[in-house]
Each structure stands twice: as structure tokens, then as C-alpha cells.
Image 1: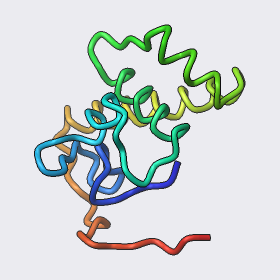
Image 2: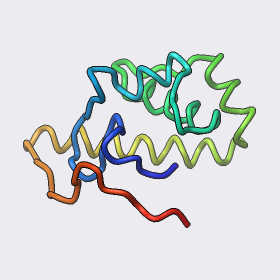
Image 3: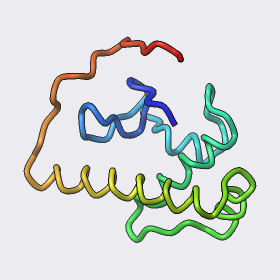
Image 4: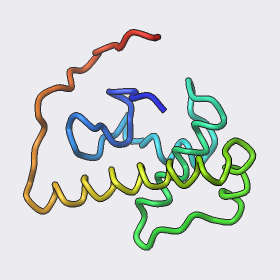
Length: 112
């Protein structure tokens, strides 16, 4: 998945939760309505959102949906990456780590 700075539920540049019109991307993913994301990407957003809950729980239905798009090996890697980002975000909150200033509203990345 590529970064969608400015609309992401978690922006790696600010290391903190973000909202978009009081409606997080994770919420829209759970409701199945995320513009600009493919169905596989939406499923991954739902997985990451579920993993960030306390307690974390990826439902059997979500797992079955993920398996339609990804192999077991791919899901292991994707879950490990999501877990690492969740760990980093929670760790940074303990020490009140702020933004590194890389994020600028309206910033666009070149498509490859």
C-alpha cells in the first residue's frame, strides 16, 4: 500500500492518528467505502484498523476476505508490517514524539 498523506488514518510522517472530516479512514474501510483504494487495499486497511484495536481481533470474515487477495505468506508479512507501525506509534506516544515535519497538506507523490 502506498501512503496517502493527508487522508491516512495513520500518517508515518506525523507518527500520530489523523482524521479526515471527523471520519477516519479506518472507519470508512470498515464500512466498505474508501474512494481511491482497490478492494484488496480496503481489506488491508480494515486489517490494520482491527489490529490497532484493544484488544486486537481480526474476524474470521475479514481473514477470509484477505485470503481472497493474499497468500498466507503475504499476510504474514503484511501483518508484521502493520504490527511494527502500531508498535512504533504506541511507543512514540509514551515519549510524546511529535512530527518530524515531513508532512505538508496537499503534498503529492509521483506515481511510478
